[in-house]
Length: 414
Image (cartoon, one colour):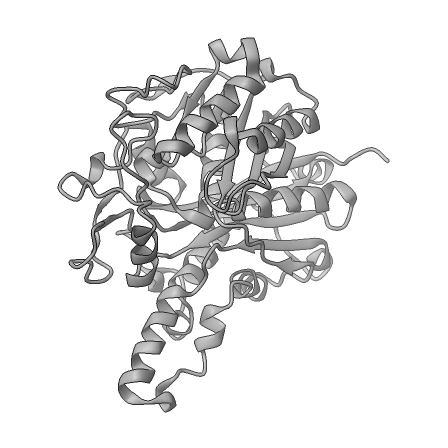
């Protein structure tokens, strides 16, 4: 049976660079970082005291106050980003099509800040102070749950969880469901709100975070020889995917075709990628093959590029291996240099950014790239955005546990 084509018809983005697609995109193409000192909790005792916080997000601007109090911040992000993507798509969910629409939305950690706050209250004031909404604040699948209830979506509703690959997996699995005919449209992506004492403290204890506290906007520096770890961040990314002919029939604006999805496991180490990022090579090759393309057809890669010592070099070695001679003209950048690392939301946020690069003809830069690591030989779009028409783009997402996802988007012909 021939696979059904999948159109991207809606985008939603909440990032440290701004709430909404346009605010984030404007900051990204102008090379502005969203990283700053942590304000969401007292981080004074931590070695790393910086993060990518979403400073302009006011949940009550979008969600009723009573509902806001019942939701963890990660669920608030998910609901609002999904609202944005659905509004952008123009897709109307009706009793007639509700069972043919899915919601596949993940999170790497879920309601961590609610866990911390509830535990503190229980210790200080007793277990009778535990909120009846506490478990609901923790559960990752409440993100798609709230979205389905808000919009009347009655198709499959579930969450992915695969560390930093979480929301890229969500998009890929939504694509597969549409291709197989299980449903005709999906809201897919991810959300994360990890900026808390345990969230930041845990990654700091692993020595994974940058300690460039005196210059936070310069702290995330993928591919730079002076990088010293990633910058933790929060936010959400969502896409609306639709079966191609349905989208065309209703006159939808089609941003791009999601044509390739590759996933793999390293089977190597809990945190360190395999040599030459062999697992990522397999996910990239699978996505390119799935898209029916050759490596030379891809003009831009939004790299996982977290700003860690080993990960950056291995990813770029993997890309060089996969693309071969085509790597000489390939543009690769890491927008985490501006957003920080949104963990489980990163894959979807960067998928949105990749689609915008494809449709708007602008490749966002890798900022803070002053002294490129000598082990990296690819074009990293240093410091300044570049106008360039490309016909296909790839977005990479890799996570702890050795999980890898690559997504390929093609220019729309519709």
